[in-house]
Length: 184
Image 1: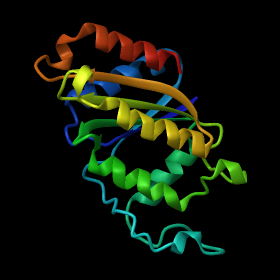
Image 2 (image 1 turned 90 degrees about the vertical axis):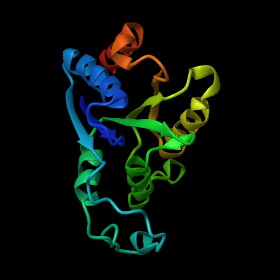
Image 3 (image 1 turned 45 degrees about the vertical axis):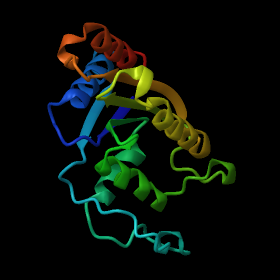
Image 4 (image 1 turned 135 degrees about the horizontal axis):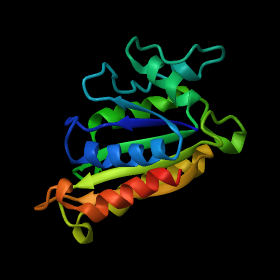
């Protein structure tokens, strides 16, 4: 399987990146092909809401940035992994811009037009708070609903709180992440 990981965090070696790499290592060990796209620093602009991409015979989004390259990779993937630190009970800006720009693709599974139908999806998320009070379930719910609407198969969430204990010192969380990747 081809796995595309969309990494929205700003720290290429931070906690979210560490958790994501464990998932990808597990997937590679299981024989899957992986690609990680670091979205922070790429020129991916927010959706303008102009609807040009939905006009008859539209050739996609009218913005000229790095998004066409990302969309080509997303189309070719069997599995999408969305990786983000949780910022203010939401996903990080680079991933938010990217997901919003998915609007340029056909996505409504009810209309049998989804570019996402049949793909698997997973959320990898970290938070600076313990899980019992950080609100991670709200962000997870958004991704579950996105999967339902687009026809993707929800594969679950890999998550860790990193408030006082660096992820590198949480072997159970790292093991869980690697196992999740192997299970894809």
